[in-house]
Length: 510
Image (cartoon, rainbow, N blue to C red; front, side, top):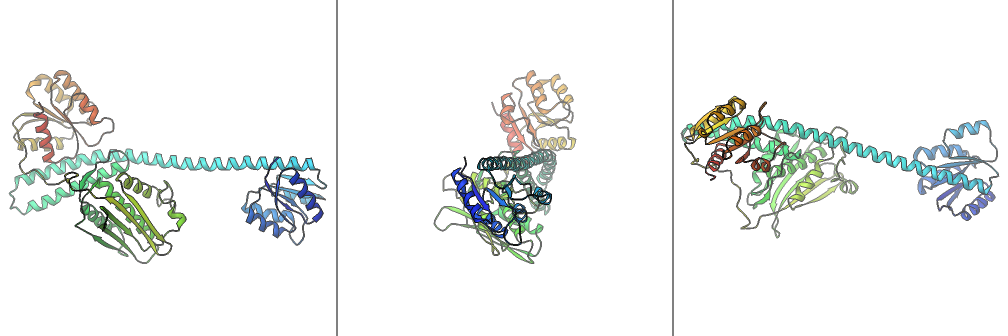
């Protein structure tokens, strides 16, 4: 027994009456009848019955097989043919429709019931298979995207390590030259600009690591106007001149607690999406506004475009992972879901307004820091660097970095002995452990890593003071490093000030 919805297509009123009566007695729900192929098609498309009992011979110029062909082109409705007379031509035509049954009139009630039950069962099994296959494909696509992101993360980690080493060398070399020049020298300004560029490059590497989930987010209290302006400069150089960037950044807006690289990422994602919405137009306007709300203690970052806009149905799904309206290869569907996640972690929210044909507006709302909640982060450098006269061992397989670190430390008054081979460094330390007051070593080195070197040194002298540096490493954490006795675990690149402070702190730790 079933309450399945059935459509009867039959041009004989007496047969229709008898079928309807029989089916209702069996517990089925007859939702309609039709005596022509056209009526059958219209009813099927509008009501989507669960099964159709289709007579082959009908009124008009369309028979049941022709009607079934049109229905099955668009709908997976099971069809059982009924006919008073069957010939080879009809059977051959009917087979092409893949019917769920083929009954000869007069049809016995039990025969009808068995055929309907089997047809409904097979149809439901096939529907479940199709659903399972769709889910499998969806999960397969998500797995593919996850694997692609994992590969991207692995690649990002490798690039970050090498790039941070290069930045460390560039940053240190610039600071050495700058320190030697008098303040009046015109080159000092150029050196300062170059140094600021290395800080920005460092932030970009951090952004890549955060995006690929290879680094924890670091939030601090700051003004984000410089972050927004820097992002818009980058966008201006990458967008076509047909896109006008209209910016209104209020410099009087207060500070927020945020990860600047993630705020940068939010703006880049939203502005890139806005550009894609205007790609098909001859010209467009990308408007970026940052202001403080008139009555609430929040910052509003508004990105609007004059693009094609979105329907309400699309707006409802824009934050779904892997959902995208872009063509294959033009996007992963992850951008807005990442933006939503970042804003949510910053205790903020996003409001979206969009009208098809008239553009879209995204408003990011972030809470401002109340007065007294904390101190703002500053990029000011310490003018008088902490110095010393202790003996330091420097170990790094990149000889240029080792030489740069040596020169920095010697300029701070320390006695330095540098090694580009970690085995040689250990042998030297082993000969006279008391000679060195501190060991500054890189982590990623061939044969004997910085961590392994540190363990061997600590086995010789449990009170040895060690600072471990790395461009990037997933294999060890700061907690693990400190647990074995290493004083500090620092990420490259770090400027002269941070290095000087870290060394002094490690030496004065007792």
